Amino acid sequence: MVFAILGVAFYFLLPQVTQATNAFTLMLKGNYWLLGLAVLLEMSALLCYASLTRFVFHSLRAELRLWLVLRITLAGFAASRIFSVGGIGGFVVTYKALARRGVSRSIAVVAVATQQFFNYIVLWIIFFSSLLYLLAKGRGSAAGATFAIVCIGLILGHLAYLIYLYNHPTTLRRRARQLAKIVNRARRRTVIAVSRIDEWVDNLRAGIRPMTARRGAIRTNALFAALWWSCDILCLFTVFQAYGYTIHLAPLLVAHSMAYTVATFVPTPGGLGTVEALLLALFAGFRVPADVSVASVLVYRLINFWLPIPFGTVAYLTIRKAERAEESGTLNGTLAVTVPASTQNTPRAAEASEPANSARRSEEAAAEADQPAEERRSVEP
Image (cartoon, rainbow, N blue to C red):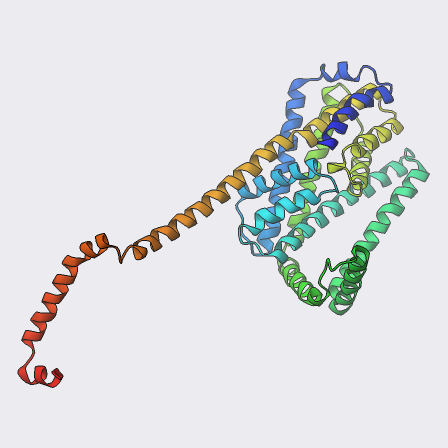
C-alpha cells in the first residue's frame, strides 16, 4: 500500500520535477488506436513470457498447460508489483502455485533461475548491440558507455563463475557451505542447514541436466525471451508513436535495457520509480522532447506495470478457487468411501444386510446337504 501511494505521488510529481507541465494534457491527446495496439503488444509480451516458462518446465519433464502457466505468470507479476524486495513476492506466489500441483522444489527453483537467466542474457545482448551501434555512429557518451559496460561486465563475470561452479560440483558444494555459514552467522541462527547442502546441490544439478541435454532447448528459450523483450520494447515504441513522435530504435533499446537492468537491483516492487527515472534521464540525453517523453513513459508504465495487477489478482483468485475445489473434491471422495464402513454396525445397516445373510445361510445348508455322509461325519466333532 505504501509503494502504491508513492507510485501515485510519483506520477503527479514527475511532470513538475521535469518541468513538463503539458505532459498530463498531452497524455489525453494520444492516438487511442495506437494505445490500444500498445496494450495488445504488452499482452503478447506476457503470453511470450508464459510460453518461455512453460517450455522451461517442459524441458525439465514437468508438463503444464499454457492457460495455467499464464495465470500463474500474471499472479506472480501482480505479487512482484505489490510487494517490495525485487521480485521475491512473485517468486513465492509462483513457487507455491507450482508446489501445489506436484512440481518438485528443485525443478521449480531450476526453472525460475533458468527463465531469468535467459531473460537477462537476451536483455544484455540487446543493450550491447544497441550501445555499440550508437558508439559507431558517434552518438553515445564515452563515460556513460564505460560505466554501463563495467556494470554489466561484472554481472556477466558472476554468471560465468556460476557456470564454472556448475561444472565443478566439489567446488560448488564448498562455496555453498561457505555461503550458508556466512548467512547463518549474519542472522545469528540456522537459516540454511549446512548438513543438507550436498543434497540440495545434487538436486539442483539433477534438475539442470535435462535442460542442458535437450536438443534445441537453449535456442528455443532464447527465442521466447527475445520475443518477450521485443513485444515490450514495441509497446514503448508504439506509445511514442501515439503521441506523434518517432523515436530512433537504438536510443530506445539502450534506454529500455539499461533501465530494466538497474531496476533488477533496487528494492522497490517492479522497479517502480527507477525505471521511469532512468528512461526519462536517458531520453533527455537523446534529446527527446520533455513533454512527449514524460507522457509516453507514464502511459507505457500504466500499461506495463499497473495494468497486469488487477488481472494478476483475478488470476491468483481463480488459481486458489480451483485448488480449494480440488481439495474439497478429494475430501468428498474420501468420505464417500469411509462413511458406509462406519455405518456397518448400526441397526439400520444390520437390517439392510439381513436378507443377504439369510440367503448365504440357505446356500451353506444346501451345500452341506449335498455332501456325502462320510464327508459330513469326518468334519463332525
